[in-house]
Amino acid sequence: MIGASVSRNALILGSFAIATAATLALINNATIDRIDCNRQAALEASLLEVMPAERFDNNLLADAILVEDAQLGRKVQHVYRARLANHPAGVVIEATAADGYGGAINLLVGLTVEGEITGVRMVPPHNETPGLGDKIDIRKSDWILSFNGTSLGQPPAEKWAVKKDGGAFDSFTGATITPRAVVGQVKRALDWYDAHRDTVFAQAADVDDTEHCDD
Image (cartoon, rainbow, N blue to C red; front, side, top):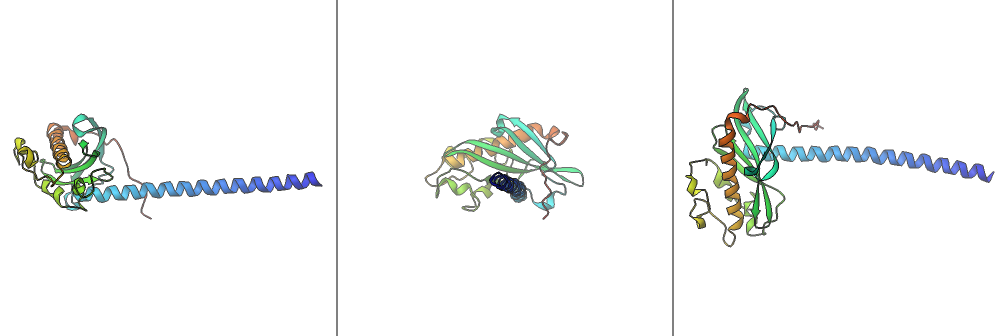
């Protein structure tokens, strides 16, 4: 009798454990999917900040290539290609300034197909000093908008620096390292695109980051 009771209790506990594990697995999978969808939505919003929606009609996330080049500041970066009516319209380049005051600063650099900047944004998180270096964040300052409409040659190459270094771009009071790093990396992204513009649209897409996240 005691043995049967123990066996029955063990069976009940085992069944409960299996059911609990299955429920947790389902919840975990659903949570991971939601996190991925939230990340995708945040990226799409960031891309639209540097590449206005009226400039393209394709899916930027699905039309991306992976690039490994020291000019972009990290081992592998995405380059999102914008097309309008199946014609090249621009790119959004991921680039990382490794020489920020608090460490690496991740950027998105939007360009027309001709190479004019449509927008630059810092991609959180960053470790720049609050109240000083964090003015690269559009939520803290409009400084990052000073890149809009610039390109190689406008300003001239020697002016792609902060004013303290003889360049055309403002720095922040008490903080020069951060804007210097961003200006330098944006210029390197422009140089990279100028060197690769003839081939960047010809490559097959390397990745498809899209998810089914409608609901």
